[in-house]
Length: 271
Image (tube, rainbow, N blue to C red; front, side):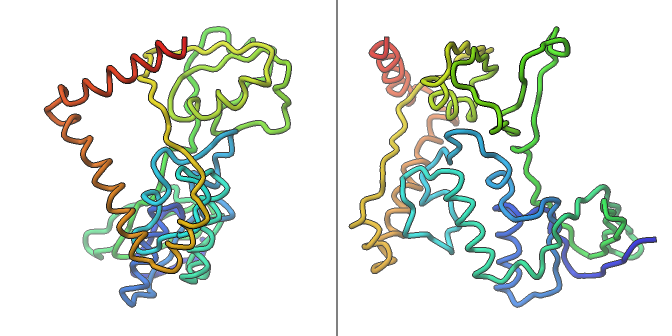
């Protein structure tokens, strides 16, 4: 029989969701919570994914906690190391590590209606008991490998972008990439100049739009540090700019015709 830990709230996962929940609990004056994290550090998908070009796909000033803005993002779309570093800094600032149980993975949970509490089983054998169970688990680090005929007999090197093999040198190799999702869109341009040949297989072609990425000027970072309200205004601008697209996605697709024509023009110009 393993250890039994009783608390008020169990948070599963130490990525953006789990850390945000833990911070809000502490800001509300609660200390009766634990965070279960199966890895040995915080960060979630930003700890696990390390493929070339890994970065956020919305602006950094949006892809961060609204209550913990970072004036020092180096680019408008920050890279994986910078985002992971941000999450570790936030973790330390709010003294969350003492509440995080690293190397502990949830393997099952049951609700006891008579007791009014959750009983959580873990890979360590320890049982955690609490009234509230918050799932902050993500799925963007879990590889999904399609059932491809002949894959089991392929003699070359195979790996998923979520488990990038940094020990294997792709330079001068013939490479096949399956899929054109968010990960492939980022790493394909990085490896294409290095490999001898690259074949890209996709089921459904996506629309290709330019990414408005650029370095954040030093003067802007100084302004955000010295006058925090300016960063809030900039973030609000980005928020409404991105939210405006929802009108086209929800019942008014004709409003996206301009984007379609622009994408077609870009593809034509590229060829």
